[in-house]
Image 1 (cartoon, rainbow over the protein chains, first blue to last red):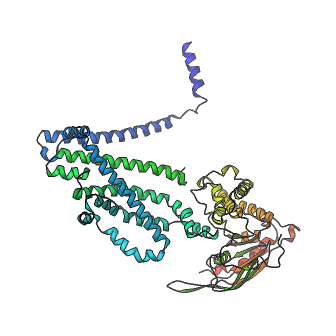
Image 2: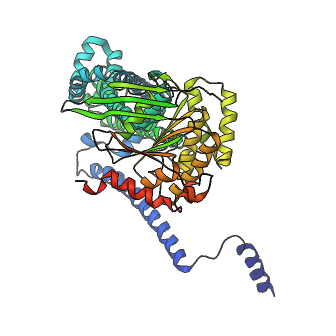
Image 3: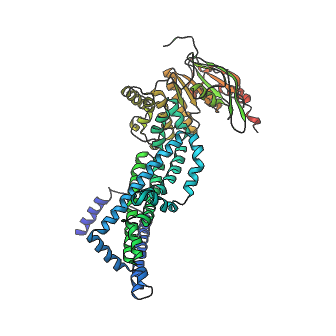
Length: 285
Length: 264
């Protein structure tokens, strides 16, 4: 009696919702879930194994703890520095320098790319210089920037120098890749060069601008940390040099962990911007 | 209606040279063609014969090396809103909704926005795109996108339409259906049309006159007035025209003139 009732309600709730899945399809879905789970399992396992080896090896004297420190000590340093506020100060310095340098590099790169698009003659004149400047290892300029610009401005200059040439080249190539028929369309409607830029070229280059953002976040962070190695009185790059000079590996490792966290957060933010922008742009739907 | 005695398009003795570092090319040589108001003229020729270049000259984006081009009796010096242009690709801007794409001409020309919007909505509704006004181009099929492109061209109310192989990027069925639709729209609006195509059947089925161009340097080889007396007084739709007895005769004549068989 009662079993009949449950069967009846089952049928009522299930049949109208979805057609029954075939066993083969159920099997396929299950194998997909299993695969995703096992991949996550491996990822967590790898991190755990790394931490365990890092903890166990120095404690048992297999490697010198002076050289590597260990996770529990790094965690303790991290908590102390978090509590006394030094970590927040240094992180804030590095973060604001990165965001400032990144924004500056993007803006300067965009302005230069627009100028080159506007005047093909100017592009022809400057092309070899941009290529050479892009190829020069910008890190080599750190001491010069320090002498010229001092301890604060040199770090921003470094972040901009590292990112700006790639940005110019990427954006200019993107501008050139706009369908010439779209530009012809605008000209047929009597569009001025300014209108072509604002209504066709810039909105059409949104995907390129986003790729440039993605590349630049990482580059600006590199520029800032290297700049801090040389010049700074604060920041995570400063913590790393300072920590290694006084042989405080806890400090060095803590700074590296925070750097990894910062770059992940920035990258995730850019990815969110990318998803929204590309959906609006019509590339995805 | 204007009743001035000028032809809608007057091309007289037009020659075009263009230069590249490698060579000098004579693209068009002494081309003359007059198109009457309300006439539909198709220009056929093998690829590279300069037929698209001729359209660009009429549009005012390019100036001829010698000779003169007049639209409505006025020398062409720059693009004019009285001339509409349709491309092989729909060239819709993928980041703009369909209605905003149709309105882009009005934006560039600084026309009254509310009037343009009303007209755009009217056109899109007539072309069966009413429910897609807010969609992005990527959500539409090729035929729908090309209809939206037509609405964009007609939104600025041009008197003369230049069609640069507007159907050649579409699949065969869509192409036949759309050329029927567009022929009906253009006939109803009594527009002057110059169509450039490499498809002889398309030219014969749509046009009042077919102009055959020779291979480079482009010259006008022959002009054919197209009529379908077997269909009666009315002009057949492109689809009906393809079934008329005259169609294969025109096709054979023009085919022979195009010299497509000795392509090397």
